[in-house]
Figure 1: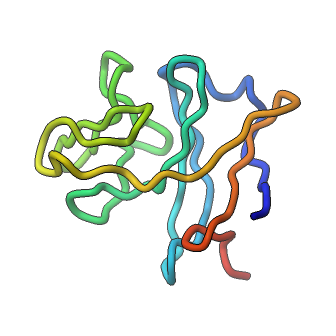
Figure 2: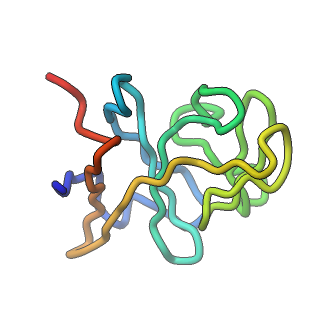
Length: 121
């Protein structure tokens, strides 16, 4: 697994705007995103569990108004930021596809796996 730099730690604020980054998910070019919740960085594939569309309202806007849940901008599905589990809306019981992240030396990285890879050149 390779570590790929996303952003500086200070760029990701608690319950605030997420950071998007390009990935290849299986055979499809897509985006991943990272958010900070409970002081921890979480990464997910930017794809709703209900319908495979991007979640954010505008680039990086993943949280609903309270900053406690990730919300799909299209159908209103509600996801728990720390698990990706859908706790309300049309995808109840589904979950977001996690992307492994690591925070070290004031930087945030994502890690490739068998499904999530860097964008093809």
